[in-house]
Amino acid sequence: MKKILMVLTSVSEIADTGEKTGYNVAEAAHPWKVFKDSGHFVDFASIKGGQPPRDEVDTHDPIQVAFTEDEAARAGLYNTARVDVVDPEQYDAVYLVGGHGTMWDFADSEGLQKLVAGVYEAGGLVGAVCHGPAGLLNVKLENGLGLVQGRKVAAFTNDEEVAAGKDKVIPFFLADRLEEQGATHVSAGVFEEMVVVADRLVTGQNPASAAGVAKEMEKLFADVIHQEKAEEQHESEAVRAEKDAEKSAKKRAAAEAGH
Image (cartoon, rainbow, N blue to C red):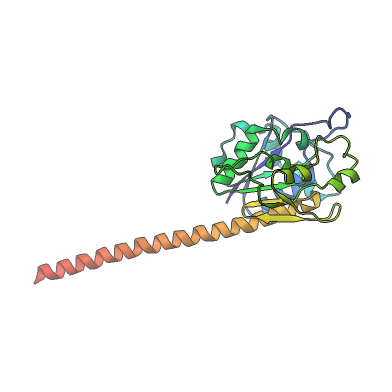
C-alpha cells in the first residue's frame, strides 16, 4: 500500500468576478477511485488548510457521487492540513488536483513547492492534472533545475481557456508559463484526453485526463513495488546463503575437531 497526498486549492472565487470556484471534483474523484481500488491510502491537504472549496458536483457521474459520499474522504476533506506543515517523507506520491482556483494560489505557494520537491527528491511520484500543474511552477530541485525544466508536460491549454470563457480573467496562461520555465507543453484537441509521463512526473491536460494520470501513476507504483520485492528477495537469499555458509563452517569445524 502506498500513501498518496491529494492537494487542493483554497481559492473559492475566480478573481473579482463573483463566480464561485474551488477544486474540480471530477479531477479529485476519478483518481481517488483508481488509488482506492488499488488499495492505496489517500490523504488530503490544501494551501490554507481547513475545508477546501469545490466546484459543482456532477450528480450524473457515479464516481463523483461516491467520492462526495465516502465517509473517509469526507472526513479527510473536512479539515485538511496546510501544505506548509505536511512532511513530504510521509508520502509516496503527491497529486495536484486542478480547478481554476489553483491559478491564484498554487504557483506562488512556497509550502507547495517544498512539498512537491521533497516528495520527488525522495524518489516519490508527482502527478498533476488540468490547472493542477500550476503547482509545478517554481519548484526547484536540489540540482538547481526546475522540476519541469527539460520535461514534456500536459496542462490546460490556451484554447481550452478560451473555450471555457476564462482567458480574460486568469492571471496567466498555464501552458505558456510552463514553457517559459523550460517545459515542452504537449496537448491534444480541446477537452480531449492527454496524459504525459516524464520519469516520475505524470501530468494530464484536463478533467478527461484525470483518471489516466492516476492509472499511469499506478503503473509506476507497480514497477516500484516489483523492484522492492526483487530487492527483498535478493536480501533474503543473501541472508540465507550467509546462514548456510555458517552452518557448513560449523560442520567442518566439528568434523576437524573429531579427528
